Image (cartoon, rainbow, N blue to C red; front, top):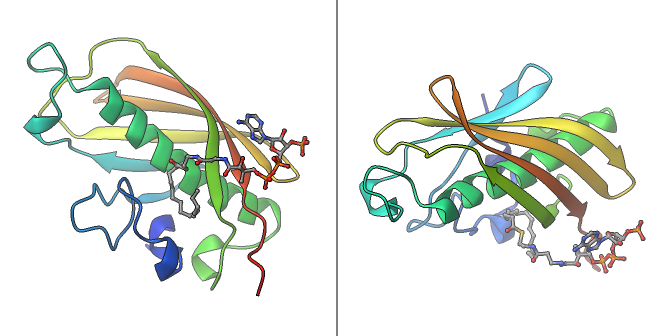
Length: 154
Ligand SMILES: CCCCCCCCCCCCCCCC(=O)SCCNC(=O)CCNC(=O)[C@H](O)C(C)(C)COP(=O)(O)OP(=O)(O)OC[C@H]1O[C@@H](n2cnc3c(N)ncnc32)[C@H](O)[C@@H]1OP(=O)(O)O
């Protein structure tokens, strides 16, 4: 299965969180999970929060952010009757609003799962509900608004 981020043109493949061309980055990969989307990632021990054994909150926000923008593009393509993974130049989205609710400490040393659910597409706007799980425990939830970038001038 092709990851959403692997569909970004080379020019947009350098994001710290999800760019496949960023060797120092996280290289997050997002996929369909039925009608929703998901991604998995195990943060290294350097992403410790203040409490030993707990993941840094900024890392949690980054994982939700990058999974969210990729999901926004996939959801928007689907709403338009297209398959993002088959598009040569798919829609490109950026985050304008991300509100994270840290519900419980996120443990280090385990694979985390990020999920996104579409709430609605309105023109260039995609609203989503996201969550981050460790095993079956929801550690964080988020509301996100992503906006589609206008097509580049030739
Ligand atoms: C920058 C990178 C480029 C490359 C992209 C490549 C993409 C493929 C790689 C993806 C990689 C993933 C990356 C990880 C996720 C990030 O971290 S993205 C980086 C963080 N986000 C940003 O830097 C976004 C900064 N903001 C912007 O660039 C511009 O405000 C935007 C979003 C392009 C919109 O500007 P615009 O095209 O001039 O549109 P504008 O008319 O201002 O707004 C359109 C609509 O959005 C609404 N809106 C705009 N901003 C907001 C806001 N902050 N809150 C609420 N509503 C808003 C407006 O009210 C308007 O609504 P309507 O009036 O249509 O109802």
